Length: 200
Image (tube, rainbow, N blue to C red):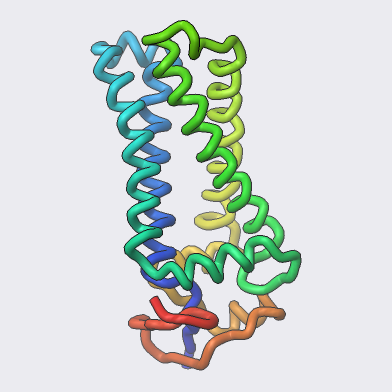
């Protein structure tokens, strides 16, 4: 009988899907502003700018709210694991992806706010701000495509998507891919309430 073990808490999964949803929204509105053909097709450029800017602030606020109201111990434990070199619940590629995503989020926020302020006050206009924001777009797109390929298509890693949708992965898969991870006690259902070392 196939057995499952807990991998991600509800808070971790909520944070992930909120981040993904807002990123796709910002990507869509950003591309509509960035590409002249899309911008002409959509029209109402000022509205798109407002949606993009305020959507970005809502993105950060939503992530902060989940972190504040959710299971902070689970998030802190995951953050500690992402900082180490050991092959526990995350492989090196996942750790690099998480670190780059956090860095891109911060840089998107800073450059986006500067662009918004720069349209209202010339003191906040810097020649490199637009270049940085655009470069982040391309880098984030590459990261997104790689992430989607490994999570949805690649046979060896796509089972990990279950961990981010249902919270659990098969015990056999966990032991094979993460030999250093202290796999939690066995569970035969998907309504799991613990991760490797804590609760949801």
